[in-house]
Image 1 (cartoon, rainbow, N blue to C red):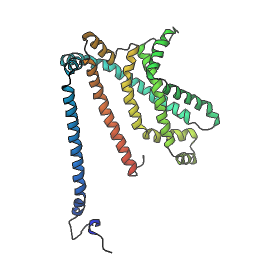
Image 2: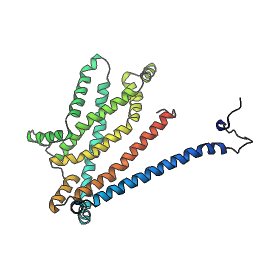
Image 3: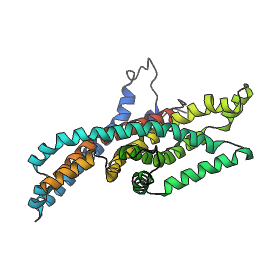
Image 4: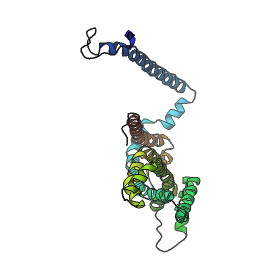
Length: 296
C-alpha cells in the first residue's frame, strides 16, 4: 500500500523534495499556532495589568496610598540602610541552611533505618518531625528567643541572633528531613539489593548508593524550602534582631510612612524571583532528562 503523502518521511537523497523541506512544511502550522498562542497570552496579560493599574490609579484613595506607600523620597532615604541590614538576614539564612542540610539528613536516615531494633530511633525521628512541623515557626521563635535566656542557666547564650538561628534550624530541619526521606524512598529497592550483592554493608549501601541518588532527586524541592527560609528570617526580628524588617519598621515609625516596607519588598523580590526561576529551570531540566531516559 502506498504511503500517504502527509505521512511521508523524508530520507536523504529523496528525489521529490530536498532534505528537510517536507518536515518544515508539516511543522509550519504548529509553529504558527504556537506563535499566535504566545501573542494572545502576552496581549491579554498586558491588557489585564493596564486595566488593573487604571482602576487603582483612579480610585478615590489613591493619592493617600501613594503618599503612604510609594514616596520616592522615603524610598531613596531608606533603601540603602535596608540593604545593609539585609546582610543580617543573609547571615541568618546561610548559617541556618548549612546546619539544616546536615541535621535533616541525619533525621531522614534515622527514620529510614529498617528492622525492629531501630524502632526507638525511628520513633524519635517521627516525634521530632511531627512536633516541629506542627508548631508555627513564630511560636518556636518566641518560646526559645524569650524563654531560653529567661531560665538563667549558666553558659546558655542570651543572644537573640543565636536563638533565632536555633529556631529556624529546628523548624526547617523537620521539613527538609521529610524531603530527604522522600528522596531516599524513591530509590528502587533493586539498587540496595545490587549494592549488597557486591559486598557493601547496609551503611555503605546507604552512603555510596542510596544517598547520592536521593539527594540529586530532591534538589529542586530543597531549593524551594530554602526560598521559604530566606523569607522567614524576618520573623527573627520579633525577638530583637535588628535585620532588614526591623530596620524598615524603625524607618517607618520615624517618618510615619510605609514606604520602607515597600523598599524591603523590592529587596526580597530581587533575591527570591531569580531563585524561583532557577528552581523552575532545574525542575524542567530534570523532567526532560527523565522523559528522554537520561537517568539520574
